[in-house]
Length: 424
Image 1 (cartoon, rainbow, N blue to C red):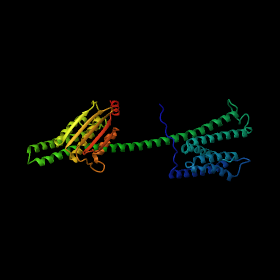
Image 2: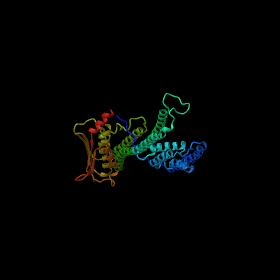
Image 3: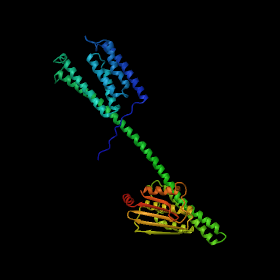
Image 4: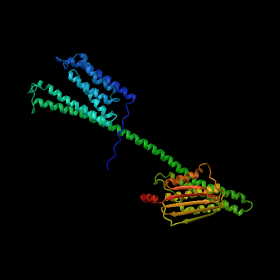
């Protein structure tokens, strides 16, 4: 398996601060190069019968060094100008050697590190290096007759002086240009890695924000499902108790008992959920064992205690369900029952659970007025849609023909069972 490569996009240009730095460096190098021209002349390095004037000598030094002002903004143009000026100064025999050689090195390095098009930058650098070696060959051809056959006085060694000098020039120049090329490549790779690191950090930050938002939505959904259902039942039972307190104290006592049980159950579920949230060493978002489809009978009992004629029927051959699917199905039924108790003014409630080929279907219908709370169905229906969407299922909700309201959800089982098997 090959490792992923770093994306080689175009490198952005230098910042204003980097441009100012390049300006300062180039002016400093140019100033030192001009000073070095006068030092070389005083030492006799640039003295010959065909030596040009001092103005031309200074001009060639400036032509090589001043383009470094734009080395990061236009590295391809700079390397061409520096290379041409470098060779031109050597042809005229009027060039200061030390500073301009460093300028050529910097120009080749910068093109590798800052070139916009990496492939074009490589070709241009190789072309410049090849041109330098061609010039080296031409220079040796023109000057070979000036070199003594036996070398300078005192020369000794295993190779002829002319061959030794040629090999020395080739090795030194190969090391010089090779190092400039390699250093530019290394600098470019370093920038690529830094950019990829920044992109990964930004992606991690976005993923972290999404995870926080998702967790908040999950907590809000769980709190709504747990609290809304039991508080709705408590409100209905309390209302029944108020109406029956004088007429039928026994029924009022029964209603108060149901209110007490619902309050206790709500508090217990809240404690379980808050405990799961505090648990930092758990295995992720695992649904509580209590919030499962097996508890649908409790919802039916509470609906009956609230005065509804409630039934629950199971169709098909039940299969073991993953915890997440069981929880989602239970919460959908719970929310549908809660909406019936709060908004429908119904008298009957019919819950049907169907184990179909490859999917689980839950169907909750009542004979109420079929009203939908709010313009989008309320937070409860939003929570149902989110639960179904997590499992790539389908949710249908709306008034029934002939009166009443229906919520029907289908949750695929094949994918859920496969995921559950992988987790085991």
